[in-house]
Length: 186
Image (cartoon, rainbow, N blue to C red; front, side):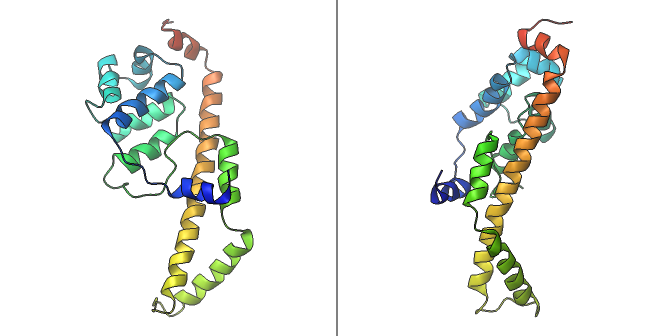
């Protein structure tokens, strides 16, 4: 992924459609290898509720999304919900889809060089000394906050990859997970 492509990926605007809502929860569940019934059991709800969330008929509350993210080993669902469905999170720059470690590393490579961070820190310190951002400083301030926002996005992506790995390993060690995936109860 080229630097400009990766940065465009970081800054891309995505519009939420009903089709996207109805598929994101279903996609995460299917990727986890779970049926609606086994997912419902893990999330402690009825299969009908799972179906309503997946079809877009109902919006799941945050606690249900958190349980889905955990049960499906899909930590990106937290961010997707915050950015796409929660009024408080709209407009936040967070990764909203599953990401592999290699993708996160490519994004990190696309962020400005490490020396730039040091320069940005010094300049931000200079700007903030008088507690006022004047007209001669505003362009620098905006550029610095944009670069820091990109770095924050990459940091969240790397954390999400780690959490996804941790959740998958936990479920690999859980013998009941295989039974739930096939619909067999023990």
